Length: 134
Image (cartoon, rainbow, N blue to C red; front, side):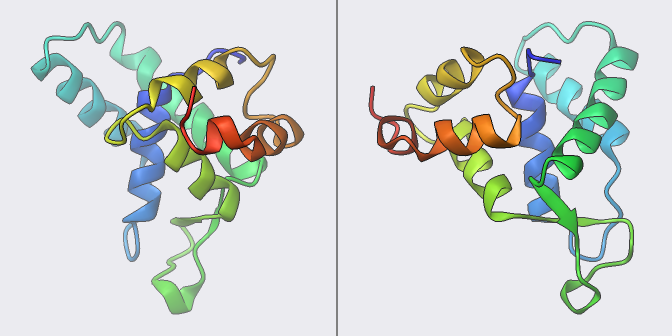
């Protein structure tokens, strides 16, 4: 999985960020993401594939340290997450509401596996990508 749907990953990370007290459910988030794309006039493709991909992304994000189980004292219920420092960096790099978000996404796409921990940590530490400059 070396090609990522950054918009879907952004949506999942935002749901993690706002998920205290709520179970993390990637399949419905994928449906909501598809509905938002359709409303914006963008093609959505195969919805079942998008839902499957969202579940795969949850696993990758968890296993590679972008998200971790939310502590009970922070609203954790055993089925929700918090962003780690790595996850926060990823969200800030790919956030489409921030001007210049296309450049970090392009740099990430140029990597063999941009969500590999060592690769991401190296690439995200570069000033030109972290600052959004070209």
